Structures are given as C-alpha cells and as structure tokens.
Image (cartoon, rainbow, N blue to C red; front, side, top):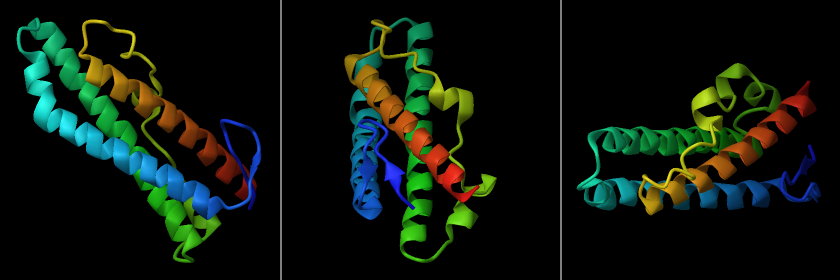
Length: 144
C-alpha cells in the first residue's frame, strides 16, 4: 500500500520509515507533555484565576488524549508492518483513530491566558493528530 505524505502530498516510498518518524515524534511529544504536567504545570498555574486553572487541566487532558490516540494508532500500524495484524484488521473501528470532537478541536493555542508551554503542546499535538487522521483515512480507503 502506498501512502501519501499529508504535508507534501508526495508518495511515501518507505511507509515503515515514515511511521517510525511519526512514532518518534509522538514519543517525544508524549515525554515533553509528561514533563510539562509533572514539573511545570503546577508552577505555571500559581496565581491564575480558578477558572483558568480548570482550563489548564482540561487542555492538558486534551494534549494527553491526542497523543494517546495517535500512539495507539501508530502501534497498530507497526503491527501491520511487522506482520502481526493485517491491513483489513486495522481498518476496522476497533483500531481506528478516535477522539473525535475533543482531539480535533484546534482551540487553546490562541488563548493568551494559558501558559506558553501548554499552548505549544496544544498546537503541536493538534497538528500531529490531524496529520495522523489523514493517514487513517488513507489506510481505510486503501482497504475498502
């Protein structure tokens, strides 16, 4: 199955390498998000209005949801490339990229009341999620 790079529109000759780069990017963002939540989120929230602190928590969960969904989808794709699953199996709803409205909502990065680190994670996780959503559509179309 030939995939298209969703950013350039060009055919990807080595899907395994492409998925490995996306996997590495996702893992790096997961680690960065974990470090932000563990070490910076509390200090970033000091002095903020309670409503904004609640929004920080909500947006942190949005980042985590996006990255978790992307990682699960990528692991299923890796299983296909390793011969552990078939394309038909991963094209089912069980392996579909999920998260719907929560993960596709682009809001957050433009909210100046949120800490800069969180806004950056929101923006990058959204771009990654949307890129993988396009890949998920390609995979499903190729099997259909």
